[in-house]
Length: 319
Ligand code: HEM
Image (cartoon, rainbow, N blue to C red; front, side):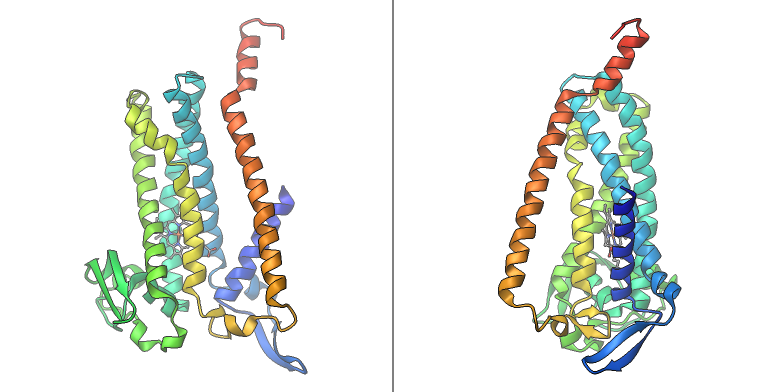
């Protein structure tokens, strides 16, 4: 368990370094230039590590909180384990509210870091073509990459203000980034905006649901309980598309500004080997997913057995 947390931490550090490289120098070797560490702590705490770590941990907290809330809502809808469901939902809401609000703050901090360190990614997140002060924040929209335009519902000046606290701040637009150094703009725009919409929906559901749960109203609102039960997928989708926005948004770079993805293809590993390992990984992970899902389903249907036992004992039962 601890080992897997450490592995996750190192993956975040390694990936952050590839997004915002620091603490290294380039040396020439017979096989070509190579990055060597000159400052270990600068590598570990590169400009995006802490943003990425805190944002990802909050994403995991949200996933956990919404699993508890979803199972609780399901029990209430099925009229089963009612006391257990109400008690666990109240705790679930505390965690969901904290995590969703902190997620907004870590997301904001990530956006500030992206603005500083990966201007092409920020411009793609917002479909911003012109380099300009008073840059708008798009709420919803569509990017036409062929015509280099974005049609969106936008708040003027809000992007400049959000990334620098000043509407006069100049945001670099995609027109000032060479065409072969831009990510697929519309894909990144849509993924990023869907993540933010999910973030806002989770804040509304956590805060609204929490208040209704503490006042006792939620447990009689079946339509809202259905939404709570189904909302378990939102943090899962948020985590996947957030990650996709961050990774597709840094393209065409594998190490931002230093090495392109196309140059990172190994000359010794063939296409057949890559596709074979990809298929094998997919099969193994699909198998694990199906097993996880079946076990989770069984656990949820079995209900809180240990709690029932302890209540039975408290009532004087002997087994
Ligand atoms: C509340 C509004 C949100 C904002 C403003 C926001 C902002 C951001 C930004 C700017 C990035 C890109 C970071 C980078 O490329 O360096 C990002 C990535 C990400 N976001 Fe969000 N986000 C929000 C909500 C969420 C939610 C609700 C989830 C999941 C439950 C989520 C999960 C992620 C993940 C997994 C990444 C990738 C992190 C990585 O690169 O390791 N975000 N987010």
